[in-house]
Length: 202
Image (tube, rainbow, N blue to C red):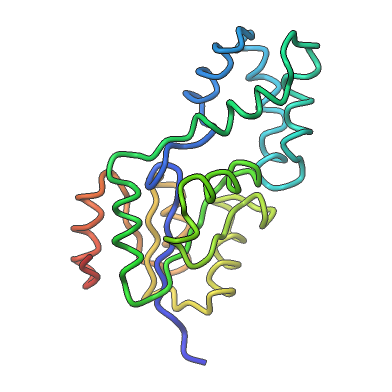
């Protein structure tokens, strides 16, 4: 079987906001009038398991919020976690343009299952991407070597002909170590120009 040319694209930081990053956590924690330092300590203790599918949303909430016997339904905090996601300026438009390329366009992203599922449905990502390689389902996160090998193998992709788009250099360096061409996303305009330089005008 001939190896394929594939576009691998991050979601948070390229198409949408980083769904549960520090800024999002501070916003939601403030809305519920919790102590951020205490919440953050608990978050850091469980976040790897949460983002690699070893802990579901209920378990995450129980260990970060529920243990304090809050005076609000813990489920409301979970709903706020999901709803804080927003499209980045031009992000969905860029993804729509990528989808017009005559090759598979798939995600390669670090997200919990709950956040991933919400964002796919809420922002219509299943209409834009052909497959999702998400840490919450794969059990491993970027920049771990295994997630790149898994995505390349499943897609039967030729690393030298494929492209990985991400906003974090450490993730790009790991992809480049597999022979993938990489684009450091700083804006939709810069990414379009970088794609064009690789012969992939959109």
